[in-house]
Length: 92
Image (cartoon, rainbow, N blue to C red):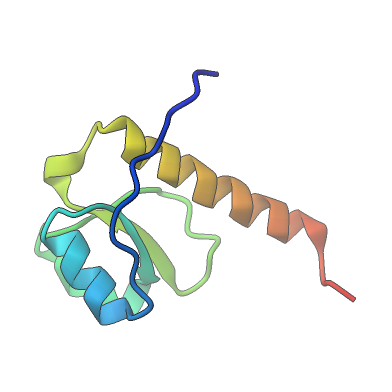
């Protein structure tokens, strides 16, 4: 698997700011599904992964960024982390 170096970019602690950044084309974000449902329905954002095992979250990005290796790498990382945590079970 090729190594992809991801550029650093803005980071947000506020989901509203993260949503606005994704809408502005600044990158991808992991947001509550209910928060971005209208943006997805209106084609302002697209869901990055069809897997929705991360309950109440949708991984989204602007369609104009489709095909960017950094977006694919972020999606793969989030899905791998979700799978790992799901298989790990509860932490004691």
